[in-house]
Length: 236
Image (cartoon, rainbow, N blue to C red; front, top):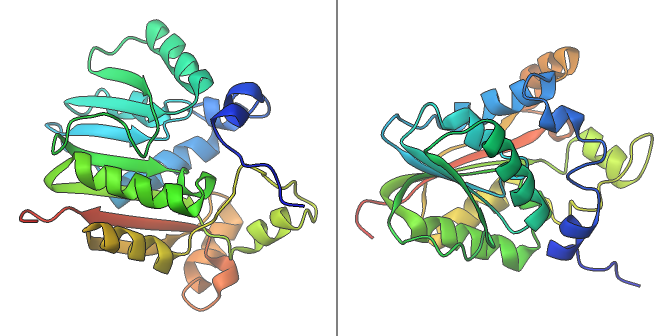
């Protein structure tokens, strides 16, 4: 029997944004510092840039980037996510930061209006057809020359194997479709993007990341994260 589809109702009715997420809500946690640093290594927006964060979750990148760019919109289809982000924004106001409850594949934002779209830890939560819609939407809302930055787990890493087989680690049922580096770059190219960067990144765990950094080029089990940067051509 197939598993029920994980969608908006799951995120709004479960404790996904509440239970066991201290490392994600705490901006000073080792994991969150690592995550922000590595995502901005893919592409660090300029002060004049208008940015969209697709699948904004807890609003992390909106709050990180608001003091550094022209404006940021965080988009998530979960009412619970957007409610959490707006509560945080009321407590930590930024005039150039806003949150929008919408599908990342159909945001309603103006075409050719944004300089940077980022998507950190979203694509593993998307079914194949939804992933294609999100990539197409990123292309649509970006200005010519704009960049799409993607960060997502690599299923082939040994920790993901352990989780998905529930060996020592608990499976995350919301991770419905992992993408390989090749698949991620293929989706972006099919939507019209040029690929500027595509690589594997190491874990945040100090000892492990040194081993991964040294050996991930040869051992797929040590490739922790997929990082891709696409650019919308100036003439399309």
